Image (cartoon, rainbow, N blue to C red; front, side):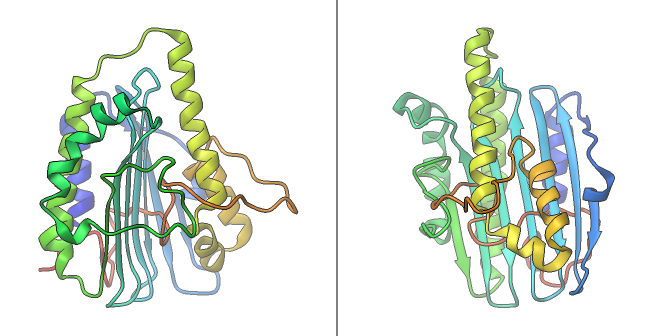
Length: 272
């Protein structure tokens, strides 16, 4: 699990005050009700980050998923760091990596997103276009989103892993260079944008259907609204979900993150 090991190492070596962020025990680990699967999640906080969540789903060959989202303290207007790596069988690997912006203002994008351009340019296999079936790429996504779809695991080691290392390093650099906001109104606006992201994502994440299939609809709804997108509220039955979508959920799969899992086909680790 090179991806998870590296991310955890960066989190603990580059951030201060890292500590477990408690959440409902029943949501931290679950096994499939009808199909063989295991989902395990972790939640942390740190100085400058109110929440860093990770989840790993191990459903054997049919599905392997690693997902993580970093939520900065709202005194920092940084984008969220969104990570989604998925494999379905041996010949379908999907990778999404992005700084998920809280604003589309040009100055904001120039400050936080533009530095990703030379990194992304190194990895042509991650220059794909995300489907608009679930998500609106102009909302909570950046133009430097790294998106790849592979029919084998080779590019995971040659392109995705080094891109992941560089994106994570740039994110930490941007955080360390940032000056925390002191204006209560601006802090509140950033916090509200993070909450909007959660609601937007919870209503559109196709992974919710995967959770329901493996772990049951009641658990899936609790996991979605109480852990993944904890600032969201369920849409009343009958109102339906809005079209379009957002990240932090999965433009092609499901969230997860398991440093202790033993996956069969593992999009979270480069091929040997």
